[in-house]
Image (cartoon, rainbow, N blue to C red; front, side, top):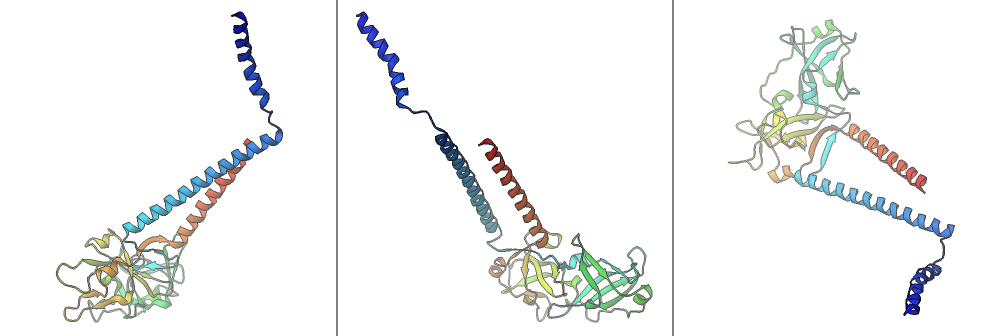
Length: 293
């Protein structure tokens, strides 16, 4: 009996030793291989995470597109200006002094800015003389803050000598002020048609109307709802009552691109900054992994 107990105890003690004897100690090469596998797994996890983030971003973008009726988004071109920004903007004269302010913009039937209507004199913006300068005789640029800078090669005496501007035809929709906030009728019109209003007019650097921004809601002029970018030549004056018609069906309007007032240049700069931050983070992550290894 004692021999049996001794044999059993000896077997129990010798079994782990035998198992250990079957294992070889890890060499430096094996350790290096294990570390390489760990790093590869970490890289794969980072890749999977990056892929997941990209897939999520793509999904979010798709969801956003669905929210905007699958329409593309157009950002405000860096050198373009809106009528809302221009109206009321001061005009700087040849000597650097303010000689007038923009009161209106005359647009021809082809959607080209023809004249800058100005208001000079007056007190606290009230009263004064109304005149007009050729749009291309006025230097209109976008400054670093993406706001309009307006200059004219005239002094105060010169601006006073400009002939008075008179509107011979009222409500002919040749003035930007007449278009802003104007209600439009979609074609085909009829009872229960969607209300559409003009929210803004976007001019390119040459003074041509780049986009007409319209909205479906009656509160469009105060900025509510999506702004659809449509071509100026889609705008016509109806025969008879003289109202405005947008030569588009509601389905065509829904398919029009959505306009964002963010400047395209700013968007690109922000994207570049985000990419720089991402690259720096990846480099930091690599440095940490190398230090751990």
